[in-house]
Length: 292
Ligand code: HPA
Image 1 (cartoon, rainbow, N blue to C red):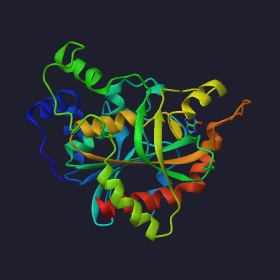
Image 2 (cartoon, protein in one colour; image 1 turned 120 degrees about the horizontal axis):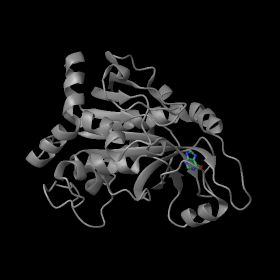
Image 3 (tube, rainbow, N blue to C red; image 1 turned 180 degrees about the horizontal axis):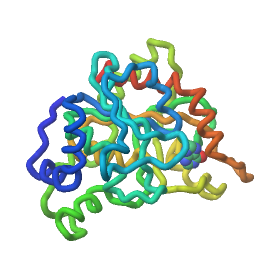
Image 4 (cartoon, rainbow, N blue to C red; image 1 turned 45 degrees about the vertical axis):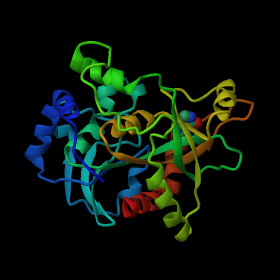
């Protein structure tokens, strides 16, 4: 996979994230091939990979810090299946009040450290009737209902205007109708996971801003358009693609959405299910690294 950012992308990354990048460079000279961002409670999936270097992002002035239970703020340099990875142990969601630019810092910094691929994991509510808590779903497509256009918002600070006309970034999408998630990469991951006997689904993930869980009426609507819902990933995937990276993503289904009557979903329930499903997520990440 190529990693040659265009001039426009390079200056945009420098403008928004140059100060963070220089602080990180004072602490590590590592270059990486890929990024992994761990979803709620899912950093345990990678704890058996020893960190070659570990940065506490609290030491990087201005780096956005996750505030939600189940997310921590370390950048670990690890090797998975021979690939050098920047592993972020937690993420910054929009519902925590972060700007789009802040919540994309991890992807941007990964790109600046050399990454050519991004692996995203998340905890999600399941909607397909064959799913159950503890299952994993490889994202075959994404639906961004966060209503926050990544390109426009991200470029706003750079151009001083809301229009994304200048400078133009190579969006990295080949054609209309193509998924943001990398189809070819997923097609290599699927047989690899199957051969190892890991059960998984494939489906569309709907990204919502949150922070509340869905009402029964919302669940009925979302069920028509996808198989899982969550509050992350879609904007990171889009931005990683803007940065010219390949993207693969996996949801751990932590709960099912209510069919009719209200069902209380608690964040603790999400964390508990995430701990149980973490080995499957680990198998997905290893397969993605092998096939990258
Ligand atoms: N809805 C939205 N996000 C989620 C859910 C859910 O039910 N479970 C885990 N993340």
